[in-house]
Amino acid sequence: MDALLPAFVAAFLAEIGDKTQLLAALLAIRFVRPVPVLAGIAVAALANALIAGAGGALLSGHVAHRPLTLLLALALIAAGAGAVWRQKQPEVGIYDRLGPFAASAVAFFILEFGDKTQFLTLAIAARAQAPLLAASGAAAGVLLAAAPAVALGRALSTAVPLGRIRLGIGIVFLLVGVATALGALRLW
Image 1 (spheres, rainbow, N blue to C red):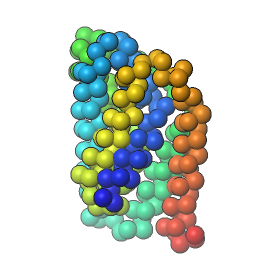
Image 2 (image 1 turned 60 degrees about the vertical axis):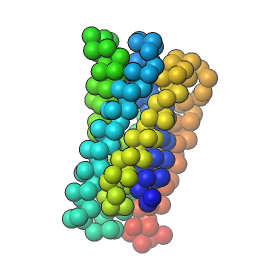
Image 3 (image 1 turned 90 degrees about the vertical axis):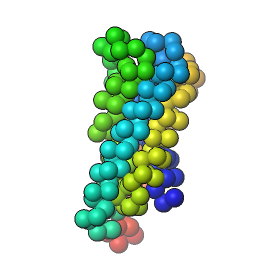
Image 4 (image 1 turned 180 degrees about the horizontal axis):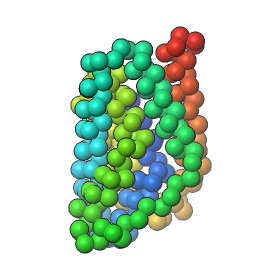
């Protein structure tokens, strides 16, 4: 459980107002079929989370606990910095020929690959030495964050102040990242 809940919360918060949430809304608008869009997103989120979990498993066997804690701090700080920067709207038109499920899976996988959520998942999996739990939690967090975007489409951005929420989440990630780094360095 040391990996499942933190990965879930970190992934969910990292995706709020992120370009992947915008992509989910655009895909839902483009294809007007929320179930296959959400299923494609689920497959892509799980694939990316499993890759991150595998990377975390590789690291955890070769790196001591304090450096892994510093890695987690770096991931949190990177997530915070990424949340503070303005997001570009992703392009979905190039995937039209694939259909809603495949287009969602491919577009979401590509956009999420190497993203802050994957970095956070890797760091949590490595530190907790529980790659499958971290991957499961992260995939569930990503899916839960994407679901309202798929359900509401463009209305999400008018109903919820995503920019302000994203800024607040970014500040929290930065503060927790700095506190984690100070703790790992035994300066706190």
